[in-house]
Image 1 (cartoon, protein in one colour):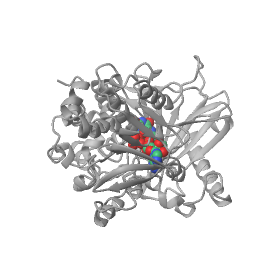
Image 2 (image 1 turned 60 degrees about the horizontal axis):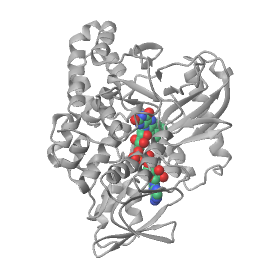
Image 3 (image 1 turned 120 degrees about the horizontal axis):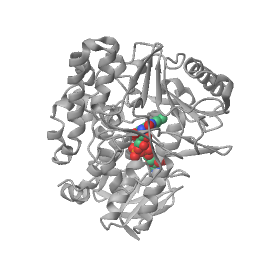
Image 4 (image 1 turned 135 degrees about the horizontal axis):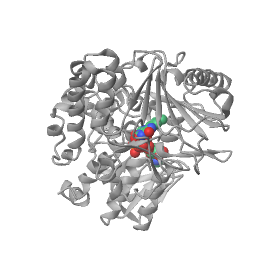
Length: 493
Ligand SMILES: Cc1cc2nc3c(=O)[nH]c(=O)nc-3n(C[C@H](O)[C@H](O)[C@H](O)COP(=O)(O)OP(=O)(O)OC[C@H]3O[C@@H](n4cnc5c(N)ncnc54)[C@H](O)[C@@H]3O)c2cc1C
């Protein structure tokens, strides 16, 4: 049987492409190497408790907002979304001092202006730029020409320069950048990435009761209902090129599956490695893609709690450093000065948290010595390393969550090695290819590859995160359906 489209990987981007193309009548097959669907959206269960891996919250899900428009199309709005507190959806704790991120652009600005009165006008300018990017998000669908799109001011400027030019108080700059463990801050981060992510969460912020896996399962069920195929334990081990284009995908080293078009949701380096023999993919192209830096990875502690820690309907971003902008370039192995604490929505109306996740950036170089080892069999030294990192995280966080140390029932930890193993992300990177405003064309990849029927999708292209990946899935589908069709589907005209 020959499919219209084979999609390699069931991360959010792969499943969303599968949904859109199925909706347009195409015969689609999604192939996932893992036991579970969803890539970073996967949850795992230990002793009856479900833990998230790479999903904690999303923004802009209120009716009419950007992610709502996309998730409404994907029929994801009936999932148990849970709004975070409007009065404080993110709490920034900077060297012991607390600051609130309040929902709504005007309210956000007002709250911080009350803390930094001399920066009132500057905050207005700051918010106006963020709002401009957020309000015009769908304008990116007006041009199919990526080069044109990337000429816009939000792309050709860096977030770092924008903040320095707009906000003259150093502490406020750190507070505003304080939720940025959701991206990798560095001096060359394009303003667009920073502004779009921050604005979407300021509009409204949401958790999902029961874990992010539901998003993947819901999309997969819809694809199946529309006649498509979604398979797990189906690793694409080779993409076969014939007469200048791909002819088939080899699954688990034995099954040959044909399609007209192939979309890869895997990291671009992993994707190119699948095309083992090629006349079309030149060495220089492979070298260029392999040479693009990737963002840091994450160390995550998923903690099951005994009763006693109150549930917080907000996230906490804790820093014991002023070095927020290039935090990850320092020693993430021996020091933990920054962490995100995310609470899982408790079932029922319990006032207590059942489990929390602590996340902190971790570089590949910290774990590289164990690369190539297998899960659960990485050795004693690795286990000791993880225990030490966990202790650093708990020491940092327990200063702000009273009684945490006594309430830990079980802990499960993961490092960039776990992500590299489970999702094939390059060097365990959390957010994929590192975007650079000075090298936009090289770091913001388009879905096209030199092979005419191989397209890319997912966080390694335009933007990471649930909103970014969802937007990107439409750029990928537009290569097959045309942008006019996408605009019709999303009722954008
Ligand atoms: C720790 C962490 C926390 C995060 N928290 C948030 C958050 O709170 N909010 C938010 O918006 N974003 C968050 N993100 C980012 C977000 O989860 C990702 O940007 C997004 O889910 C990535 O989706 P993707 O489609 O690019 O693919 P991925 O999730 O990377 O999935 C790729 C899939 O392809 C499969 N695959 C790879 N190779 C093959 C092969 N050869 N054959 C078959 N299948 C293959 C993999 O197994 C995987 O399932 C977080 C990320 C991390 C790592």
